[in-house]
Image (cartoon, rainbow, N blue to C red; front, side):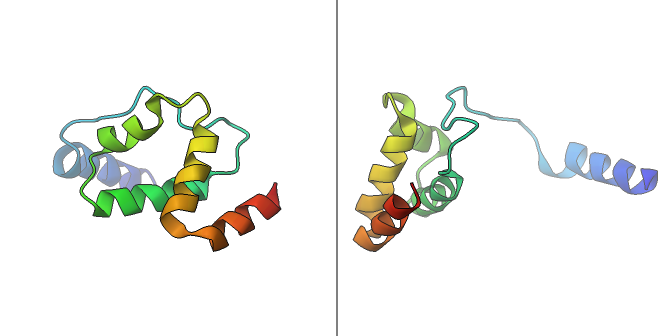
Length: 89
């Protein structure tokens, strides 16, 4: 097991990651249920050539990022998904 770990660390250190980037804005709380919605929207906006920083900017000014994500999901994916989301709450 140690050999696999050493290989993984070596691969990550030298082959894949040059610079680590992360956002400083907390996009969701620890008890929210919107993780899947964030993933779907991130994939959609990434396909539209948004940078991670631009995606984060969609939520930076929102006082409640979970409400913002729900609004964006509704506007991007239509009322069917919104009805399903509302029914879970």
